Image (tube, rainbow, N blue to C red; front, side):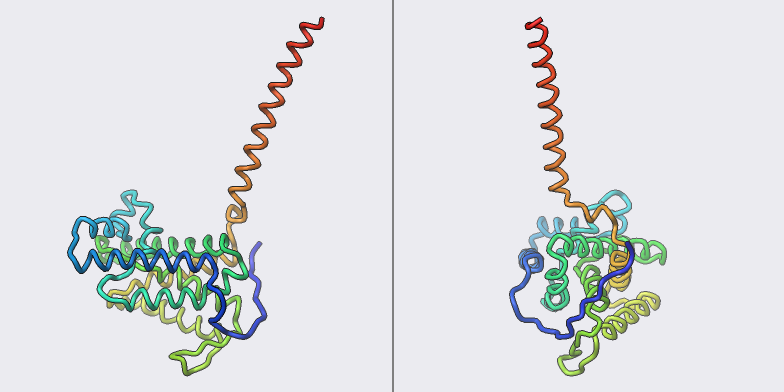
Length: 252
C-alpha cells in the first residue's frame, strides 16, 4: 500500500542507546576504514586491490560485478577522516529513530535499497553523461541521503540545528539538501563528490516509503521454517500411508 506514516514527536535528541542495527553499521564501517587507511598509507598494494574490487566501478558493474552496489557502501576515502566521520555522524543522528520505530530488519532493508539504488543511478548517469566509467565510487552517502529523506518525511517537525546554531524543521532541511543534490547533479559539479548517488538515495528512499516492495514484508527465516515443517509433515504422511498399506496387506 502506498503512503507512509508520519510520527508526531517533535523533540530532536541524540541521547540514549544506539540501536543494534546502527551500531553494527558504525562498527563495520569503522573497522573496514581502519584497515583501508592502514593499507593506503603503508602502500600494501595487494590489499588495496581488494578495496578497489569492492568499490563501485561502472565498467565492472555492467560486466557482472553485481556485488559492488552493496560493498561500496562500506568503503570511505582513506586519505583523511572527514568522509567517514560525516557519514557515520549523519547515520547515527538520522537513522537511530528510524530503526527504533521500524525495527532492525526493516531499517536494513531500507538502508541497502537506498544504497544500492544510489549506486545504480550513479552508474547509469555516468554512462549517460559520458563521464569516467572506469573511476571508483565509495562511501555510504547514497544510503544516508535516503535515511535523511525518510527522517524529513516521517518526523517533519523535528528541529535540526544547522552548524549547531540555526534551528530549522527537518522537512525544510531535507528539502534544502534534496535541492542541492539535484542542482549539483544537473550542473555536474565535481570535486570528487558523487552527486548522482546522493540524489539516487533520496529517489529510491522516497519510492520505498511510498511503494514498499511486498517481498520485503516477508520474514524469510520464518517462511523457511514453515516450509521445512510442511515438508516434514508431507514426508511423515507418505511414510504412514506406506506403513499402513503394508500392515493392511499383512492383516488381509
